[in-house]
Length: 250
Image 1 (tube, rainbow, N blue to C red):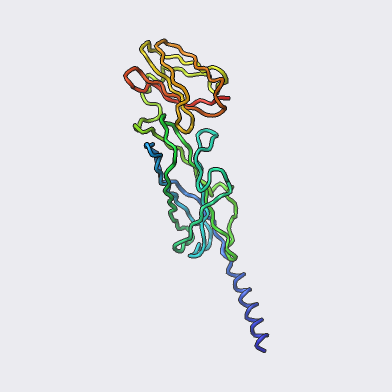
Image 2 (cartoon, rainbow, N blue to C red):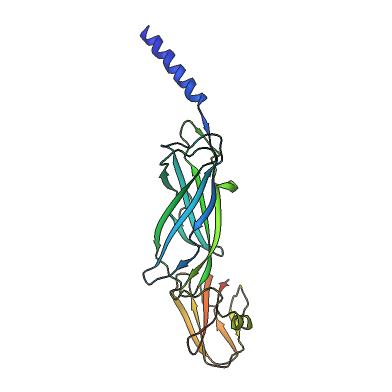
Protein backbone atom coordinates (compact mmCIF):
# COMPACT_ATOMS: atom_id res chain seq x y z
CA UNK A 1 0.00 0.00 0.00
CA UNK A 2 2.82 2.38 0.93
CA UNK A 3 4.60 1.57 -2.32
CA UNK A 4 1.43 2.28 -4.29
CA UNK A 5 0.92 5.60 -2.52
CA UNK A 6 4.56 6.56 -3.11
CA UNK A 7 4.29 5.67 -6.80
CA UNK A 8 1.08 7.69 -7.14
CA UNK A 9 2.71 10.68 -5.41
CA UNK A 10 5.76 10.47 -7.69
CA UNK A 11 3.59 10.37 -10.80
CA UNK A 12 1.53 13.31 -9.57
CA UNK A 13 4.69 15.29 -8.82
CA UNK A 14 6.10 14.53 -12.27
CA UNK A 15 2.83 15.61 -13.88
CA UNK A 16 2.82 18.83 -11.82
CA UNK A 17 6.45 19.58 -12.71
CA UNK A 18 5.74 19.02 -16.40
CA UNK A 19 2.71 21.29 -16.20
CA UNK A 20 4.82 24.01 -14.58
CA UNK A 21 7.35 24.28 -17.41
CA UNK A 22 8.34 27.93 -17.74
CA UNK A 23 8.86 29.80 -21.01
CA UNK A 24 11.25 32.75 -21.00
CA UNK A 25 12.93 34.76 -23.75
CA UNK A 26 16.03 36.60 -22.53
CA UNK A 27 17.24 39.45 -24.71
CA UNK A 28 20.14 41.89 -24.56
CA UNK A 29 18.42 45.28 -24.63
CA UNK A 30 21.37 47.69 -24.41
CA UNK A 31 25.05 48.15 -23.64
CA UNK A 32 25.08 51.16 -21.32
CA UNK A 33 28.83 51.14 -20.74
CA UNK A 34 31.53 51.73 -21.75
CA UNK A 35 31.12 54.74 -24.04
CA UNK A 36 34.89 54.91 -24.61
CA UNK A 37 38.14 53.33 -23.45
CA UNK A 38 41.30 55.16 -22.34
CA UNK A 39 44.68 53.47 -22.63
CA UNK A 40 47.15 53.65 -19.75
CA UNK A 41 50.73 52.52 -19.21
CA UNK A 42 49.47 49.44 -17.37
CA UNK A 43 46.84 48.46 -19.94
CA UNK A 44 43.24 49.54 -20.41
CA UNK A 45 40.64 49.23 -17.62
CA UNK A 46 37.12 48.43 -18.77
CA UNK A 47 33.72 47.93 -17.15
CA UNK A 48 31.00 46.58 -19.43
CA UNK A 49 27.37 46.82 -18.29
CA UNK A 50 24.54 45.23 -20.26
CA UNK A 51 20.78 45.46 -19.74
CA UNK A 52 18.96 42.13 -20.12
CA UNK A 53 15.19 41.71 -20.40
CA UNK A 54 12.82 38.78 -19.92
CA UNK A 55 10.45 38.86 -22.90
CA UNK A 56 8.86 35.52 -22.06
CA UNK A 57 5.54 34.75 -20.40
CA UNK A 58 7.06 33.30 -17.20
CA UNK A 59 9.59 34.47 -14.64
CA UNK A 60 13.30 33.80 -14.50
CA UNK A 61 13.77 32.76 -10.88
CA UNK A 62 16.50 32.55 -8.26
CA UNK A 63 18.54 29.45 -9.10
CA UNK A 64 18.48 30.06 -12.85
CA UNK A 65 21.70 31.26 -14.46
CA UNK A 66 22.68 33.70 -17.17
CA UNK A 67 25.34 32.69 -19.68
CA UNK A 68 27.15 35.65 -21.24
CA UNK A 69 30.24 36.58 -23.24
CA UNK A 70 31.57 39.52 -25.22
CA UNK A 71 34.15 40.07 -27.93
CA UNK A 72 35.86 43.23 -29.14
CA UNK A 73 37.01 43.63 -32.74
CA UNK A 74 38.89 46.05 -34.94
CA UNK A 75 37.62 45.43 -38.44
CA UNK A 76 37.47 41.65 -38.76
CA UNK A 77 40.21 41.02 -36.18
CA UNK A 78 39.23 39.91 -32.67
CA UNK A 79 41.47 41.64 -30.12
CA UNK A 80 39.65 40.95 -26.82
CA UNK A 81 37.29 38.22 -25.65
CA UNK A 82 35.63 37.45 -22.31
CA UNK A 83 35.84 34.97 -20.72
CA UNK A 84 38.07 33.64 -23.53
CA UNK A 85 39.41 35.29 -26.67
CA UNK A 86 40.36 31.97 -28.26
CA UNK A 87 37.24 29.90 -27.51
CA UNK A 88 34.00 31.30 -29.00
CA UNK A 89 31.99 28.67 -27.08
CA UNK A 90 33.23 29.86 -23.68
CA UNK A 91 30.67 31.65 -21.49
CA UNK A 92 30.76 33.20 -18.02
CA UNK A 93 27.95 32.26 -15.62
CA UNK A 94 25.97 34.57 -13.35
CA UNK A 95 23.44 33.22 -10.87
CA UNK A 96 20.15 35.12 -10.99
CA UNK A 97 19.96 37.05 -7.67
CA UNK A 98 16.23 37.79 -7.78
CA UNK A 99 13.09 36.93 -9.71
CA UNK A 100 12.96 38.55 -13.14
CA UNK A 101 9.29 38.71 -14.03
CA UNK A 102 7.95 38.90 -17.57
CA UNK A 103 8.92 42.32 -18.95
CA UNK A 104 11.43 42.97 -16.15
CA UNK A 105 15.12 43.75 -16.65
CA UNK A 106 18.42 43.12 -14.89
CA UNK A 107 21.97 44.40 -15.31
CA UNK A 108 25.08 42.31 -15.85
CA UNK A 109 28.45 44.00 -15.26
CA UNK A 110 32.00 42.76 -15.72
CA UNK A 111 35.21 44.68 -14.97
CA UNK A 112 38.53 43.66 -16.49
CA UNK A 113 41.93 45.16 -17.25
CA UNK A 114 42.88 44.64 -20.88
CA UNK A 115 46.62 44.12 -21.38
CA UNK A 116 46.57 46.30 -24.49
CA UNK A 117 47.05 50.04 -24.85
CA UNK A 118 46.72 51.87 -28.13
CA UNK A 119 49.27 54.51 -29.06
CA UNK A 120 46.96 55.56 -31.89
CA UNK A 121 43.27 56.07 -31.09
CA UNK A 122 40.86 53.90 -33.06
CA UNK A 123 37.26 52.71 -33.10
CA UNK A 124 36.45 49.24 -31.77
CA UNK A 125 33.26 47.18 -31.91
CA UNK A 126 31.87 45.33 -28.87
CA UNK A 127 29.45 42.41 -29.29
CA UNK A 128 27.71 41.11 -26.12
CA UNK A 129 25.75 37.83 -26.08
CA UNK A 130 23.59 36.39 -23.28
CA UNK A 131 20.96 33.68 -22.71
CA UNK A 132 19.34 31.83 -19.80
CA UNK A 133 20.58 28.44 -18.63
CA UNK A 134 18.07 25.67 -19.31
CA UNK A 135 16.96 24.08 -16.04
CA UNK A 136 14.62 21.05 -16.28
CA UNK A 137 11.48 23.20 -15.96
CA UNK A 138 12.74 26.14 -18.00
CA UNK A 139 11.97 26.28 -21.70
CA UNK A 140 13.70 29.05 -23.66
CA UNK A 141 14.85 29.81 -27.21
CA UNK A 142 18.14 28.02 -26.51
CA UNK A 143 20.23 29.79 -29.11
CA UNK A 144 22.79 32.60 -28.92
CA UNK A 145 22.43 33.19 -32.65
CA UNK A 146 18.97 34.74 -32.38
CA UNK A 147 18.96 38.47 -33.03
CA UNK A 148 17.70 39.54 -29.61
CA UNK A 149 20.36 37.57 -27.73
CA UNK A 150 23.12 39.93 -28.75
CA UNK A 151 23.81 43.65 -28.97
CA UNK A 152 26.76 45.48 -30.53
CA UNK A 153 28.24 48.92 -29.97
CA UNK A 154 31.08 50.89 -31.58
CA UNK A 155 33.18 53.05 -29.25
CA UNK A 156 36.49 54.96 -29.47
CA UNK A 157 39.55 53.42 -27.83
CA UNK A 158 41.71 56.43 -27.03
CA UNK A 159 45.46 56.56 -26.63
CA UNK A 160 47.09 57.61 -23.36
CA UNK A 161 46.72 61.29 -24.25
CA UNK A 162 42.98 60.93 -24.80
CA UNK A 163 43.23 62.12 -28.39
CA UNK A 164 40.12 61.36 -30.37
CA UNK A 165 40.03 59.39 -33.58
CA UNK A 166 40.62 61.66 -36.57
CA UNK A 167 42.02 64.59 -34.57
CA UNK A 168 42.84 67.77 -36.55
CA UNK A 169 40.22 67.10 -39.21
CA UNK A 170 41.34 69.81 -41.65
CA UNK A 171 44.91 68.57 -41.93
CA UNK A 172 43.68 64.99 -41.91
CA UNK A 173 41.32 65.61 -44.81
CA UNK A 174 44.17 67.11 -46.83
CA UNK A 175 46.35 64.07 -46.17
CA UNK A 176 45.98 61.01 -48.38
CA UNK A 177 47.08 57.54 -47.29
CA UNK A 178 46.51 54.85 -49.92
CA UNK A 179 45.88 52.16 -51.10
CA UNK A 180 43.92 50.42 -48.39
CA UNK A 181 44.11 47.43 -48.34
CA UNK A 182 47.80 47.58 -49.30
CA UNK A 183 50.16 44.85 -50.43
CA UNK A 184 53.60 46.33 -51.10
CA UNK A 185 53.85 50.13 -50.90
CA UNK A 186 51.77 52.59 -48.89
CA UNK A 187 51.65 56.09 -50.40
CA UNK A 188 51.45 59.23 -48.25
CA UNK A 189 50.50 62.61 -49.75
CA UNK A 190 50.37 65.64 -47.46
CA UNK A 191 50.15 69.39 -48.07
CA UNK A 192 52.95 70.20 -45.64
CA UNK A 193 56.65 70.69 -46.42
CA UNK A 194 57.78 70.84 -42.79
CA UNK A 195 59.53 68.00 -40.98
CA UNK A 196 57.10 65.19 -40.21
CA UNK A 197 57.18 61.65 -38.87
CA UNK A 198 54.97 58.67 -39.64
CA UNK A 199 54.83 55.82 -37.14
CA UNK A 200 53.36 52.39 -37.81
CA UNK A 201 51.94 50.21 -34.99
CA UNK A 202 50.54 46.70 -34.79
CA UNK A 203 47.28 45.91 -32.97
CA UNK A 204 49.04 45.55 -29.63
CA UNK A 205 50.39 49.10 -29.91
CA UNK A 206 53.97 47.98 -30.67
CA UNK A 207 55.79 50.38 -32.98
CA UNK A 208 57.00 48.50 -36.04
CA UNK A 209 58.40 51.40 -38.08
CA UNK A 210 59.04 55.14 -37.88
CA UNK A 211 60.10 57.39 -40.76
CA UNK A 212 61.04 61.08 -40.76
CA UNK A 213 60.30 63.06 -43.93
CA UNK A 214 59.88 66.66 -45.06
CA UNK A 215 58.61 66.12 -48.60
CA UNK A 216 54.94 66.27 -49.61
CA UNK A 217 55.04 62.62 -50.62
CA UNK A 218 56.38 59.46 -49.02
CA UNK A 219 56.30 55.78 -49.92
CA UNK A 220 56.34 53.27 -47.06
CA UNK A 221 57.38 49.73 -47.97
CA UNK A 222 55.09 47.27 -46.17
CA UNK A 223 55.96 44.22 -48.26
CA UNK A 224 57.65 42.55 -45.28
CA UNK A 225 54.79 43.25 -42.86
CA UNK A 226 52.76 40.30 -41.65
CA UNK A 227 49.22 40.23 -43.00
CA UNK A 228 46.71 42.01 -40.78
CA UNK A 229 45.70 45.41 -39.46
CA UNK A 230 48.09 48.22 -38.58
CA UNK A 231 47.67 51.75 -37.30
CA UNK A 232 49.55 54.80 -38.52
CA UNK A 233 50.15 58.16 -36.89
CA UNK A 234 51.49 61.20 -38.75
CA UNK A 235 52.83 64.00 -36.55
CA UNK A 236 54.33 67.39 -37.27
CA UNK A 237 57.77 68.48 -36.08
CA UNK A 238 56.25 70.04 -32.93
CA UNK A 239 54.45 66.83 -31.99
CA UNK A 240 50.94 67.77 -33.19
CA UNK A 241 48.98 64.84 -34.60
CA UNK A 242 48.11 65.44 -38.26
CA UNK A 243 46.33 62.20 -39.07
CA UNK A 244 45.77 58.76 -37.58
CA UNK A 245 44.19 55.77 -39.21
CA UNK A 246 44.13 52.04 -39.84
CA UNK A 247 45.30 50.02 -42.82
CA UNK A 248 45.01 46.39 -43.82
CA UNK A 249 48.10 44.67 -45.20
CA UNK A 250 47.23 41.79 -47.52
